[in-house]
Length: 274
Image (tube, rainbow, N blue to C red):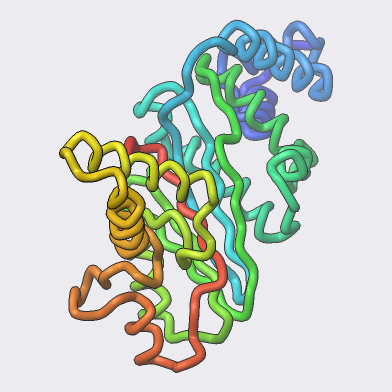
């Protein structure tokens, strides 16, 4: 049976593959669509294996929220040309939609999540590799949960943030916090949340600098402690100066809205070099 344009179009819609790839797959499979899909998938797997040692440093980062749950999904590829392609962005959006609907616990669960066409997220990535010839991978999947959430995508789809709050919060206030995190890249919410290894590293750096500057040994710890407090002020969210009003810290800005309001979690994903 000859392969028709309608058949090719149908397979292309199913797989996202190019016209010639669909035509060749259908001819090889004698117009069996399931077999043709398997042929296309195997091509994607073969290309993925060949490209496995390549660096996927470009991509698309998208985020959204719905009440008490917010998520970020980033799909990585090799070139900015592919990252900006509408089909690639739509694929990333479909993965984010699946994350919002199914709330997977981690990246592995998201990869195994089936989309409306019955293919898993992992299948879609493999199939898309066969179409573009580029290495692709699920770069990040992050989520936050609490009474209220917000998301922010920086123009260009290379940076996104999500934030959770302990109480329902005005959307503009929440967005201000999400944009603060995007701009200032805090390492934690409060000083108590900073990992001990980061604290130890900052203290040692400060001691070394003071020692190189000729400060007495008996003052090094005190100088390092002062440097650590400065680090907290610059790098913990609630102590940071509010980018829209440097007279306020983020904690003070939140307390202006509600004395009990605070951030309980945040995630920041970027494909840019900070």
